Amino acid sequence: MDERKGKYMFEKTQKKLANIYLFFDLMRMTKKIPKNFSHVMDVQARRLQKLMKRAYKIPFYKERFDAAGVKPEDIKTADDLVKLPVLTKDELREWMSREAKDPKYKEWIIDTTSGSTGKPLSIIFSPKEKAYMKANWFRVMMVAGYNPFFGKTMSRINAHDENAGGRDTFLQKFGILRRKYVNQYASEAEIIDAVNEYKPDWLYMNKTELMRIVLYSNKTGKKIFHPKFYDPISEKVDENNRKLFIKTLGEGIIDSYGSAETGACMVRLPGKSYYVVHNDSFVVNVLDDEDKMAEEGRLVITPLYKTDLPLINYSIGDKATCKVKQGVRFITSVQGRMNDYFYYENGGVTSFFEITPVIAHCADILQIRFIEETYDLIHVQIVRDDRARMNCEEIEQYLTVNLNKIFKKPFAFEFEWMDSIPPDKNGKLRMIVCNVAHD
Image 1: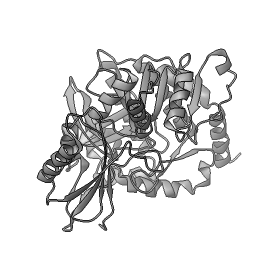
Image 2 (image 1 turned 30 degrees about the vertical axis):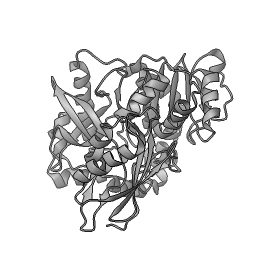
Image 3 (image 1 turned 90 degrees about the horizontal axis):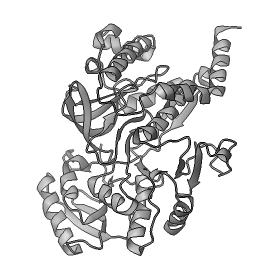
Image 4 (image 1 turned 60 degrees about the vertical axis):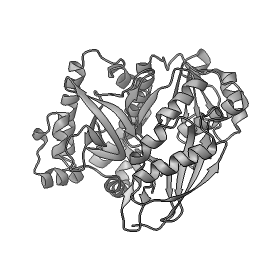
């Protein structure tokens, strides 16, 4: 048997053993927030050093190491990763496109991102890596205090989900790994009825999809069952959103952060004001514009479990703030991917990150989207709390005055008041849509 055929058979066996890998991976993961992080940080350092040695054997990364004048042994801790270049989404897209053409990946899993930040990206996982990613999602639940084996989970329908048709598996008939899917494209009333009937212990949907039923509940008075835990996924939850979710669905909000490319790398638990990184499986750094460690800047993620086709220093495009306590980095805020910028004729831009305080300080706003129609006009879709302190005209005045204090030139605004803002086709909601031509 030649080497290529042997590798193919090995990976086919890996695929069949995915659930066994998942189980043993989960058993090895840290499933509680530690009081003392020294052990988990030692695990992180060991796994990081192992990943560096593995990556250096891959031509794509050997070229990046050599260009930076770095050897694997130079990377001993998370802070040392700044010696290597940041991996951009475009670089990853180009590399994955080349690798996907290789027949040796026939038995691997190729996931595709939603394309919410532009062109979709395909990412290749070995069967073992994919099993680890799934185990890591169970770990998120267990860190929160939920038992995914005996609790009842409800989620949106996903093309990658098995058993989305709703028929119970053998294990589910015995009360193990119970899971039900809700059609996120159904009417608000139908979704709420499905949640109320199933009474899930854990509920997760895209944030915009969950916000749609929360707004409907608040407007109509139709009550929603309060799950023990719920997770608005795929999009950033701002503080105004968080308050409305808690008011409508209860205190059990989980903010799990990650991406289709990396998996869930950190979690903010109910009642907490910061995210804890899953340090045994990820390195999460914050870098400034010069790619140096900073308290505020870009989030850069290195999944330690992804050793076959690694993602080292991967920049998703989000910004964050952090604090370091006893050598451990905690993420204190995340400004999620808001897609476009506001563009000016001279090529300058303003990001959503810059105008976030104006939105956050107006609790009367439940949802908002900005559509830059011309270099002089912004169309604003907006949802107002029915119990708001300010009326529509006052909110319009507040936004016009305070946003133009931040913009590099004054814009005219036109406001469209709505009951809820419909999501994009991928189920998410872009906060900024730019319709003017720009480079």
